[in-house]
Length: 56
Image (cartoon, rainbow, N blue to C red; front, top):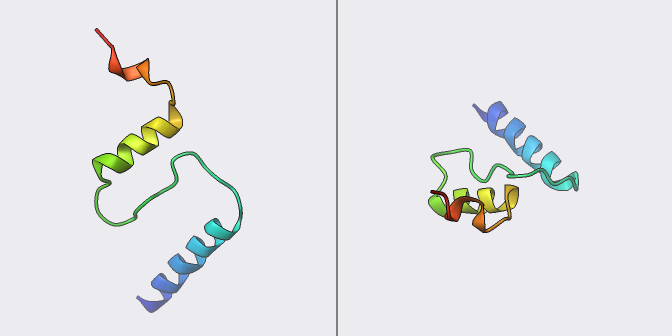
């Protein structure tokens, strides 16, 4: 189990130090994302305010 934690920390450090930014980065790897996190991810992918607000 200790090796697993160490590997995850190394991967996390690799991603944070790489300088690359991917759309909708993983916020949490435990549990479900909050509504606020989901809204932020959708806003990042589709910044058009009216895209989902006025359908139908």
